Length: 474
Ligand SMILES: [Zn+2]
Ligand SMILES: [Zn+2]
Image (cartoon, rainbow, N blue to C red; front, side):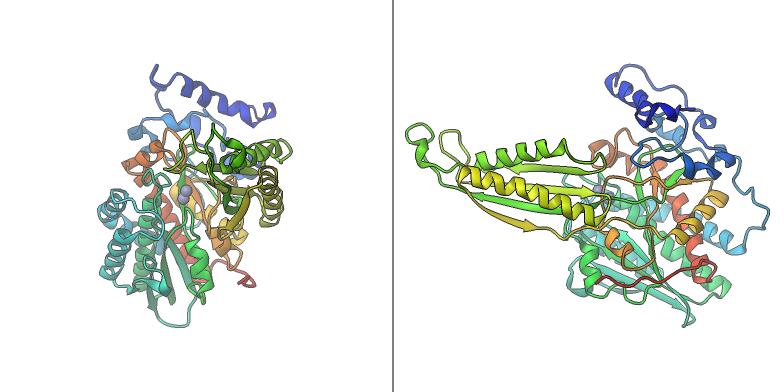
């Protein structure tokens, strides 16, 4: 067991060491008993998880390097699975049977999207593939939803008057491919919707399912635009899941950081860099001074804050001309939208200071802010119980420093956004994670969470999960 009294970072050391010796020795053979929490450990897991800590459960920290074929072992599920006294409801079997029957079709759906990575608001292949899938499975589909070319909606009602379950399916990729695993999110959302539909029909449960294809999570705030345009009206709750790295058989219902994004443009004046540099106003200098200013500010920031940016190069830049234009892009993150907003003001002062120092004009364009994710506690508890009891997942409440536009949804209506571990050599937004998002082991992990979310969805529509409506923010 990792000794947490030494601080969370100690548990990361084996990972760091392995990174250093990458390619040298193979990882030790996988032994599930080392990394799977016991029922008792899981019960007390909330006490052991520490905010900002990278270690989720006791055990070897280089969990991510277990070979794919041994990372997920159905024959090595934790001992507490199915350990509760109450008999398993029959709709759980329905969900399992439907999703087992759909497994190869869902795998194909995920791989198709994975092999056609598309940036935000350009998810045309994913839009067409997913709407075809939903229509085939009996949903009423609206393409190009609410004026967004790649957004879509699919719905199904069994007996009117029941609750409405919302589901989100993200689709967009990064320039380096599906490095955030949104192919798994889309596949899982579609799987949850079809499994819940079958359970409603088989067990004659009233309820409505609304699944939204949500574009541009990696920047562009697709869900925020859909929220503003009324796509979430009428939903009693909204759910989705997201892959990440971590020990096998683990998930988390933690928070994410809020995020403010900026594009900063400096306008100066070009000049011959050797013959008459005094005639120039150097926009690239402004960008570098802003970068240095933020770097100095970082020393006074809380450890939970994140500020990261890039300078966008230009074709016409050349060393013997003073650059007359420079563009930067920045993200500012903190655990709440209020903190992120305050931090953003301090960061903007660095931008303005650099403009003043160099004499450049400055223009700042703000992205759609992403709010911090607030998983509904009641929904989180219900999911945790289901995931642990029926699917052998150890569910914690660890958050992440990353951000999502689902944060805005979570502050407008009761929401649930579990993250879950897939085997990857490196975390989200790396080529290694993009590769991992297409593996069978990642699919197995996603399917396990899909089943848990579908069972959750049926229980929710049966009103076995209490929910307190939120006051809408938009
Ligand atoms: Zn993502
Ligand atoms: Zn991402």
